[in-house]
Image (cartoon, rainbow, N blue to C red):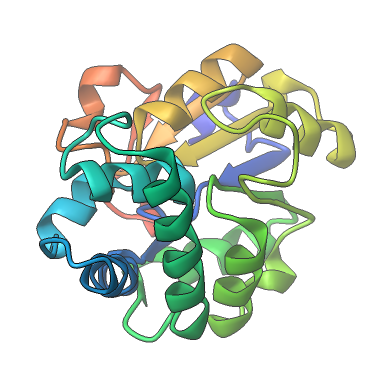
Length: 225
């Protein structure tokens, strides 16, 4: 990580949540399948949901109803009902089966020990974001926490990253975004900050290294090596 900042640590590290810090697909898949079952539609399963996540709850529900990456293959009335069902089901079990990725907690602790500011920027609705962070006792690590509905725009737009940098008083050239998807890379590029990616997350089935992040790390606790 230091090689991206002339041999010193960044002043701010911003993390994505799903697919970066937490493997949340098991709980998302349960909520999606319960929604589909309630609507008498074929179940999706973990494999499909893993490829659909990353762009927020609304897009996830649209993809599930369309049974592919498309977001227009169904009626708006059905989508509204599906979204309402999904939100209700997911609210009851946001982190029952989800797990922190190996090295995630160690990384946050190490950054805190080095007095590096941290932010959390996700496309997940803020209510679910806070529930998940509280469940894993991660909330206290972050100076700023932004969900997909916290601002007028979400990743891949740079606005959430710019807002975290503004609140933390850190310039873009001293900040690092850490994520798992093209949305994270695109947002970081547009915000003018460096970006590191993990290979194990959710990127719609595509290898994230093809998006040419500044740094690839096998595990988050390798970030400070």
